[in-house]
Amino acid sequence: MNEEHDGTNQGKPSEEEYQRFRKMIDGVGREGLQRMVEHLTERIEANPRDTEALGGRGLAYAELGDHRRSAEDNGRIIALEPDNAGAYLDRARAYSAMEEHRLAVADYDAGIRLAPGDAVTHYSRGACKAELGDLAGAMSDFDAAIELEERFGLAFYARGITNVNLGAHEAALGDFDAALGLDPDNASALRGRGVALGSLGRYDEAVRDFDRSLELDPGNAETLAARGLAHTSLEQHELAIEDYSRVINLDPRNRDVLYSRGIARMYAARFESAVEDFEAIIGIEPGNGAARAARGLAREALGTQGGEGQAAR
Image (cartoon, rainbow, N blue to C red; front, top):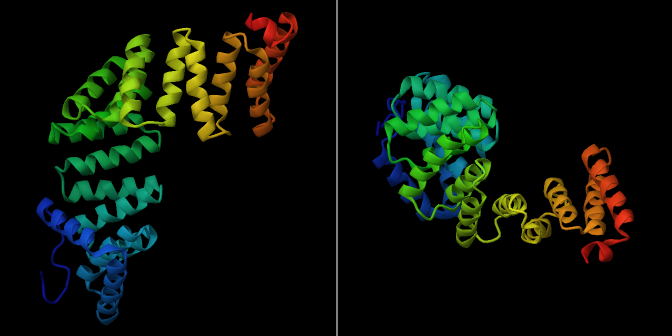
Protein backbone atom coordinates (compact mmCIF):
# COMPACT_ATOMS: atom_id res chain seq x y z
CA MET A 1 0.00 0.00 0.00
CA ASN A 2 1.15 3.52 -0.72
CA GLU A 3 2.46 5.11 2.45
CA GLU A 4 1.37 8.57 1.30
CA HIS A 5 -2.21 7.28 0.84
CA ASP A 6 -2.44 9.31 -2.35
CA GLY A 7 -4.80 6.91 -4.11
CA THR A 8 -2.45 5.30 -6.58
CA ASN A 9 -4.32 1.99 -6.31
CA GLN A 10 -7.13 2.71 -8.74
CA GLY A 11 -8.05 -0.78 -9.85
CA LYS A 12 -10.59 -3.34 -8.75
CA PRO A 13 -9.41 -5.49 -5.80
CA SER A 14 -8.29 -8.98 -6.70
CA GLU A 15 -10.28 -11.97 -5.48
CA GLU A 16 -7.45 -12.84 -3.09
CA GLU A 17 -7.49 -9.33 -1.63
CA TYR A 18 -11.28 -9.46 -1.31
CA GLN A 19 -11.18 -12.80 0.53
CA ARG A 20 -8.56 -11.44 2.94
CA PHE A 21 -10.80 -8.45 3.57
CA ARG A 22 -13.81 -10.74 4.18
CA LYS A 23 -11.88 -12.78 6.74
CA MET A 24 -10.81 -9.63 8.51
CA ILE A 25 -14.37 -8.25 8.57
CA ASP A 26 -15.80 -11.53 9.83
CA GLY A 27 -13.28 -11.47 12.66
CA VAL A 28 -13.71 -7.92 13.94
CA GLY A 29 -17.48 -7.86 14.52
CA ARG A 30 -19.72 -4.80 14.71
CA GLU A 31 -17.86 -3.07 17.52
CA GLY A 32 -14.59 -3.58 15.69
CA LEU A 33 -16.09 -2.08 12.54
CA GLN A 34 -17.23 0.97 14.49
CA ARG A 35 -13.74 1.39 15.90
CA MET A 36 -12.37 1.02 12.39
CA VAL A 37 -14.66 3.83 11.22
CA GLU A 38 -13.43 6.06 14.03
CA HIS A 39 -9.77 5.38 13.21
CA LEU A 40 -10.27 5.91 9.48
CA THR A 41 -12.22 9.11 10.13
CA GLU A 42 -9.21 10.48 12.02
CA ARG A 43 -7.02 9.66 9.03
CA ILE A 44 -9.43 11.34 6.63
CA GLU A 45 -9.67 14.46 8.78
CA ALA A 46 -5.89 14.66 8.75
CA ASN A 47 -5.75 14.10 4.98
CA PRO A 48 -9.05 14.52 3.08
CA ARG A 49 -7.39 13.10 -0.05
CA ASP A 50 -6.56 9.78 1.61
CA THR A 51 -8.49 7.56 -0.78
CA GLU A 52 -7.28 4.38 0.88
CA ALA A 53 -8.89 5.49 4.16
CA LEU A 54 -12.04 6.63 2.35
CA GLY A 55 -12.30 3.26 0.64
CA GLY A 56 -11.80 1.37 3.89
CA ARG A 57 -14.38 3.47 5.69
CA GLY A 58 -16.82 3.04 2.82
CA LEU A 59 -16.48 -0.75 3.09
CA ALA A 60 -16.90 -0.59 6.87
CA TYR A 61 -20.02 1.54 6.51
CA ALA A 62 -21.42 -0.97 4.03
CA GLU A 63 -20.81 -3.83 6.47
CA LEU A 64 -22.57 -1.81 9.17
CA GLY A 65 -25.56 -1.32 6.86
CA ASP A 66 -24.96 2.43 6.44
CA HIS A 67 -25.05 2.34 2.66
CA ARG A 68 -25.68 6.05 2.22
CA ARG A 69 -22.39 6.94 3.90
CA SER A 70 -20.66 4.17 1.98
CA ALA A 71 -21.88 5.72 -1.27
CA GLU A 72 -20.73 9.16 -0.13
CA ASP A 73 -17.22 7.96 0.70
CA ASN A 74 -16.87 6.23 -2.65
CA GLY A 75 -18.19 9.36 -4.34
CA ARG A 76 -15.37 11.31 -2.73
CA ILE A 77 -12.87 8.81 -4.09
CA ILE A 78 -14.37 9.10 -7.58
CA ALA A 79 -14.11 12.90 -7.40
CA LEU A 80 -10.40 12.52 -6.63
CA GLU A 81 -9.79 9.56 -8.95
CA PRO A 82 -12.27 9.46 -11.85
CA ASP A 83 -10.73 6.20 -13.14
CA ASN A 84 -11.02 4.23 -9.88
CA ALA A 85 -13.04 1.19 -10.93
CA GLY A 86 -13.26 -0.22 -7.41
CA ALA A 87 -14.88 2.95 -6.08
CA TYR A 88 -17.53 2.88 -8.81
CA LEU A 89 -18.30 -0.76 -8.07
CA ASP A 90 -18.44 -0.24 -4.31
CA ARG A 91 -20.76 2.73 -4.77
CA ALA A 92 -22.89 0.69 -7.16
CA ARG A 93 -23.31 -1.99 -4.49
CA ALA A 94 -24.29 0.68 -1.97
CA TYR A 95 -26.87 2.15 -4.36
CA SER A 96 -28.22 -1.33 -5.08
CA ALA A 97 -28.59 -2.05 -1.36
CA MET A 98 -30.63 1.16 -1.09
CA GLU A 99 -32.71 0.06 -4.14
CA GLU A 100 -31.48 3.05 -6.13
CA HIS A 101 -31.03 0.83 -9.13
CA ARG A 102 -30.64 3.48 -11.84
CA LEU A 103 -27.72 5.04 -10.00
CA ALA A 104 -26.27 1.57 -9.42
CA VAL A 105 -26.47 0.73 -13.14
CA ALA A 106 -24.68 3.95 -14.06
CA ASP A 107 -21.84 3.08 -11.68
CA TYR A 108 -21.68 -0.52 -12.88
CA ASP A 109 -21.42 0.86 -16.43
CA ALA A 110 -18.39 2.91 -15.38
CA GLY A 111 -16.86 0.02 -13.44
CA ILE A 112 -17.23 -2.37 -16.37
CA ARG A 113 -15.75 0.20 -18.76
CA LEU A 114 -12.73 0.69 -16.47
CA ALA A 115 -12.30 -2.95 -15.40
CA PRO A 116 -13.96 -5.24 -17.96
CA GLY A 117 -14.23 -9.00 -17.79
CA ASP A 118 -15.68 -9.59 -14.31
CA ALA A 119 -18.59 -12.04 -14.15
CA VAL A 120 -19.91 -10.88 -10.79
CA THR A 121 -20.09 -7.26 -11.93
CA HIS A 122 -22.13 -8.23 -15.00
CA TYR A 123 -24.41 -10.36 -12.83
CA SER A 124 -24.89 -7.48 -10.38
CA ARG A 125 -25.68 -4.99 -13.13
CA GLY A 126 -28.10 -7.48 -14.65
CA ALA A 127 -29.89 -7.86 -11.32
CA CYS A 128 -30.34 -4.08 -11.14
CA LYS A 129 -31.62 -3.95 -14.70
CA ALA A 130 -34.13 -6.69 -13.91
CA GLU A 131 -35.40 -4.64 -10.96
CA LEU A 132 -35.88 -1.71 -13.35
CA GLY A 133 -37.85 -3.89 -15.78
CA ASP A 134 -35.11 -3.90 -18.42
CA LEU A 135 -35.31 -7.64 -19.01
CA ALA A 136 -33.43 -7.57 -22.31
CA GLY A 137 -30.58 -5.66 -20.68
CA ALA A 138 -30.60 -8.03 -17.73
CA MET A 139 -30.46 -11.03 -20.07
CA SER A 140 -27.45 -9.56 -21.87
CA ASP A 141 -25.58 -9.15 -18.59
CA PHE A 142 -26.45 -12.64 -17.33
CA ASP A 143 -25.27 -14.05 -20.67
CA ALA A 144 -22.00 -12.17 -20.25
CA ALA A 145 -21.58 -13.40 -16.67
CA ILE A 146 -22.06 -17.02 -17.73
CA GLU A 147 -19.71 -16.61 -20.69
CA LEU A 148 -17.05 -15.27 -18.32
CA GLU A 149 -17.67 -17.90 -15.63
CA GLU A 150 -19.40 -21.00 -16.95
CA ARG A 151 -20.06 -22.46 -13.48
CA PHE A 152 -21.78 -19.33 -12.16
CA GLY A 153 -24.88 -20.93 -10.63
CA LEU A 154 -26.43 -17.68 -9.43
CA ALA A 155 -26.25 -16.23 -12.94
CA PHE A 156 -27.96 -19.31 -14.38
CA TYR A 157 -30.71 -18.94 -11.77
CA ALA A 158 -31.13 -15.22 -12.49
CA ARG A 159 -31.24 -15.84 -16.23
CA GLY A 160 -33.82 -18.54 -15.65
CA ILE A 161 -36.06 -16.13 -13.74
CA THR A 162 -35.62 -13.56 -16.51
CA ASN A 163 -36.59 -16.16 -19.12
CA VAL A 164 -39.71 -16.98 -17.11
CA ASN A 165 -40.63 -13.31 -17.03
CA LEU A 166 -40.05 -13.12 -20.80
CA GLY A 167 -42.26 -16.17 -21.35
CA ALA A 168 -39.34 -18.29 -22.60
CA HIS A 169 -40.14 -21.23 -20.35
CA GLU A 170 -38.17 -23.90 -22.22
CA ALA A 171 -35.05 -21.74 -22.06
CA ALA A 172 -35.75 -21.14 -18.37
CA LEU A 173 -35.82 -24.90 -17.77
CA GLY A 174 -32.34 -25.18 -19.26
CA ASP A 175 -31.06 -22.45 -16.97
CA PHE A 176 -32.59 -23.94 -13.83
CA ASP A 177 -31.26 -27.37 -14.79
CA ALA A 178 -27.79 -25.84 -15.10
CA ALA A 179 -28.11 -24.12 -11.72
CA LEU A 180 -29.27 -27.37 -10.12
CA GLY A 181 -26.47 -29.29 -11.80
CA LEU A 182 -24.07 -27.06 -9.89
CA ASP A 183 -26.11 -27.12 -6.65
CA PRO A 184 -28.80 -29.84 -6.47
CA ASP A 185 -30.07 -28.49 -3.14
CA ASN A 186 -30.77 -24.96 -4.38
CA ALA A 187 -34.31 -24.40 -3.11
CA SER A 188 -34.78 -21.23 -5.17
CA ALA A 189 -33.73 -22.95 -8.41
CA LEU A 190 -36.11 -25.82 -7.66
CA ARG A 191 -38.94 -23.33 -7.15
CA GLY A 192 -37.99 -21.52 -10.37
CA ARG A 193 -37.95 -24.76 -12.34
CA GLY A 194 -41.31 -25.65 -10.85
CA VAL A 195 -42.75 -22.34 -12.05
CA ALA A 196 -41.37 -22.94 -15.55
CA LEU A 197 -42.76 -26.48 -15.61
CA GLY A 198 -46.15 -25.23 -14.47
CA SER A 199 -46.16 -22.60 -17.22
CA LEU A 200 -45.59 -25.43 -19.70
CA GLY A 201 -48.53 -27.39 -18.25
CA ARG A 202 -46.29 -30.00 -16.61
CA TYR A 203 -48.01 -29.65 -13.24
CA ASP A 204 -47.10 -33.02 -11.70
CA GLU A 205 -43.41 -32.33 -12.30
CA ALA A 206 -43.84 -28.81 -10.97
CA VAL A 207 -45.36 -30.12 -7.74
CA ARG A 208 -42.42 -32.48 -7.27
CA ASP A 209 -40.01 -29.57 -7.57
CA PHE A 210 -42.05 -27.47 -5.15
CA ASP A 211 -42.17 -30.39 -2.69
CA ARG A 212 -38.39 -30.74 -2.79
CA SER A 213 -37.90 -26.98 -2.50
CA LEU A 214 -40.09 -26.92 0.61
CA GLU A 215 -38.13 -29.78 2.13
CA LEU A 216 -35.04 -27.59 1.83
CA ASP A 217 -36.76 -24.31 2.75
CA PRO A 218 -39.85 -25.15 4.83
CA GLY A 219 -42.58 -22.57 4.98
CA ASN A 220 -41.36 -20.47 2.06
CA ALA A 221 -44.43 -18.42 1.16
CA GLU A 222 -43.49 -17.97 -2.50
CA THR A 223 -43.06 -21.70 -3.00
CA LEU A 224 -46.28 -22.53 -1.15
CA ALA A 225 -48.24 -20.09 -3.31
CA ALA A 226 -46.70 -21.53 -6.48
CA ARG A 227 -47.51 -25.09 -5.39
CA GLY A 228 -51.05 -23.97 -4.62
CA LEU A 229 -51.44 -22.79 -8.21
CA ALA A 230 -50.12 -26.12 -9.50
CA HIS A 231 -52.53 -28.03 -7.24
CA THR A 232 -55.39 -25.87 -8.53
CA SER A 233 -54.40 -26.67 -12.13
CA LEU A 234 -54.44 -30.37 -11.21
CA GLU A 235 -57.92 -29.88 -9.69
CA GLN A 236 -56.49 -30.82 -6.29
CA HIS A 237 -58.40 -28.01 -4.67
CA GLU A 238 -58.15 -29.07 -1.03
CA LEU A 239 -54.37 -29.34 -1.32
CA ALA A 240 -54.31 -25.92 -2.96
CA ILE A 241 -56.39 -24.48 -0.12
CA GLU A 242 -53.94 -25.93 2.42
CA ASP A 243 -51.00 -24.27 0.64
CA TYR A 244 -52.75 -20.92 0.36
CA SER A 245 -53.85 -21.07 3.99
CA ARG A 246 -50.26 -21.55 5.13
CA VAL A 247 -49.25 -18.44 3.20
CA ILE A 248 -52.15 -16.42 4.64
CA ASN A 249 -51.23 -17.50 8.15
CA LEU A 250 -47.85 -15.87 7.49
CA ASP A 251 -49.29 -12.84 5.68
CA PRO A 252 -53.01 -12.27 6.33
CA ARG A 253 -53.07 -9.26 3.99
CA ASN A 254 -51.72 -11.07 0.93
CA ARG A 255 -54.44 -10.13 -1.54
CA ASP A 256 -53.19 -12.32 -4.39
CA VAL A 257 -53.17 -15.45 -2.26
CA LEU A 258 -56.50 -14.58 -0.64
CA TYR A 259 -57.95 -14.33 -4.13
CA SER A 260 -56.38 -17.64 -5.18
CA ARG A 261 -57.73 -19.36 -2.07
CA GLY A 262 -61.15 -17.88 -2.72
CA ILE A 263 -61.14 -19.29 -6.25
CA ALA A 264 -59.94 -22.69 -4.99
CA ARG A 265 -62.72 -22.68 -2.40
CA MET A 266 -65.25 -21.97 -5.13
CA TYR A 267 -63.94 -24.90 -7.15
CA ALA A 268 -64.30 -27.01 -3.99
CA ALA A 269 -67.89 -25.72 -3.56
CA ARG A 270 -66.93 -24.00 -0.30
CA PHE A 271 -68.78 -20.85 -1.27
CA GLU A 272 -69.25 -19.33 2.17
CA SER A 273 -65.52 -19.50 2.86
CA ALA A 274 -64.83 -18.11 -0.61
CA VAL A 275 -67.03 -15.10 0.17
CA GLU A 276 -64.96 -14.53 3.34
CA ASP A 277 -61.75 -14.48 1.30
CA PHE A 278 -63.09 -12.00 -1.24
CA GLU A 279 -64.48 -9.81 1.54
CA ALA A 280 -61.07 -9.84 3.23
CA ILE A 281 -59.55 -8.50 0.00
CA ILE A 282 -62.22 -5.79 -0.26
CA GLY A 283 -61.51 -4.83 3.35
CA ILE A 284 -57.87 -4.29 2.39
CA GLU A 285 -58.58 -2.72 -1.01
CA PRO A 286 -62.20 -1.51 -1.29
CA GLY A 287 -61.88 -0.74 -4.99
CA ASN A 288 -60.71 -4.23 -6.01
CA GLY A 289 -63.09 -5.00 -8.86
CA ALA A 290 -61.97 -8.60 -9.35
CA ALA A 291 -62.67 -9.43 -5.71
CA ARG A 292 -66.08 -7.75 -5.86
CA ALA A 293 -67.03 -9.67 -8.99
CA ALA A 294 -65.82 -12.95 -7.53
CA ARG A 295 -67.70 -12.28 -4.30
CA GLY A 296 -70.89 -11.74 -6.30
CA LEU A 297 -70.43 -15.06 -8.06
CA ALA A 298 -69.71 -16.85 -4.78
CA ARG A 299 -72.79 -15.33 -3.15
CA GLU A 300 -74.94 -16.34 -6.11
CA ALA A 301 -73.58 -19.89 -5.95
CA LEU A 302 -74.11 -19.96 -2.20
CA GLY A 303 -77.76 -18.92 -2.60
CA THR A 304 -78.33 -21.37 -5.42
CA GLN A 305 -76.79 -24.26 -3.52
CA GLY A 306 -78.46 -23.42 -0.23
CA GLY A 307 -75.31 -22.82 1.78
CA GLU A 308 -71.89 -24.27 2.08
CA GLY A 309 -72.98 -27.33 3.99
CA GLN A 310 -75.42 -28.37 1.28
CA ALA A 311 -72.95 -27.57 -1.50
CA ALA A 312 -70.33 -29.76 0.07
CA ARG A 313 -72.58 -32.79 0.19
